[in-house]
Length: 401
Image 1 (cartoon, rainbow, N blue to C red):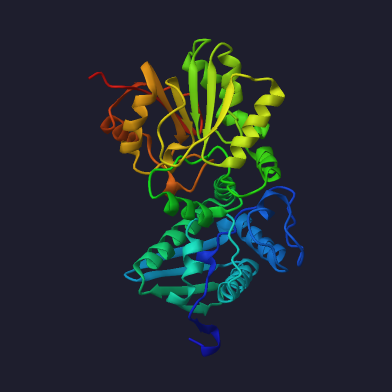
Image 2: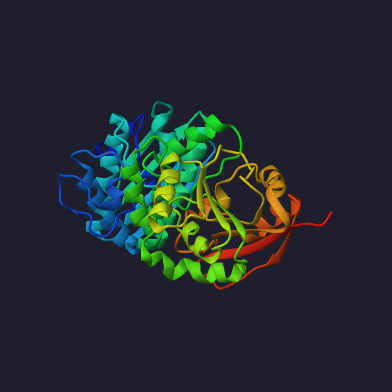
């Protein structure tokens, strides 16, 4: 190997470590300097190289079929080989590797949706990397004596392999998942989990926006209440399938901007809908939204992480795209039974393993696991409507004692 092509840096990041395979329509592409536009521009710190780096990434995303990538898990890290027979794509790979290496050295994190990059950036001094720039791309070996950091390197390599394999499909899925984390991103989510040290109700229908302004919630609402979501979420069909009585009490856990809460309220005019969320901005947003709409039967409630108690006993508890965020689920759902009326039901809607929407596949929970966990928590599956294209829909009731 030509010594000029070998770069040994104690803290570097290669294509296998880029989490910026995400962009939204209308963002600048390949414009050189300047700031990124659109929702993705809200998700990462901006600097003079942001737009250039995003342009490089999008070139790679849209040429994913021309990229060859292999990943080998090492006992203490990872080896990635990312190359292309197309000279332009190969050059883009190398340019991206060099840019991300510099970012890690300088601490200029650029992270659109990865949940593992924060661990890597926060522990950069523990990582040793050997990068070889080849004619067709880059070979990277990254090792560390810290088991947690090694696991993060390996998990992140898997995240990016999905992007290389699926291209724009994975990029949109990743963007949606990162937006759901809110402006604080995965680091903020991890900090909240650490502070709580107990099961958390996560607002996956909405971003995590703790300590951010209400105007931020307004911006997130434009994304989460986009009418295009209706095409695959099918909210009217979901609510019809639940067969709610007009006076039913419903708890929408992780209600976020109120996508389901306000729709449920119209279907239970004599009842009540509690929109429960752990994020103050989202609770305020839903309260104001209900007031503007004249929905007096919607009550936005701020909940403490891990608290399964409801304001009153409910006929239905619904979790849409939230189940996979909850820790210690058996304990949480056992406690939740105390807040169900006799005959009360629990509805869980979450993304299938092969859905083009939703969080990274590594973060998803298969419906079989949901069924097993809830059975262990004392529930029995009663119905499983199958009309949602990207999600499973499971309806449970507490088992008779």
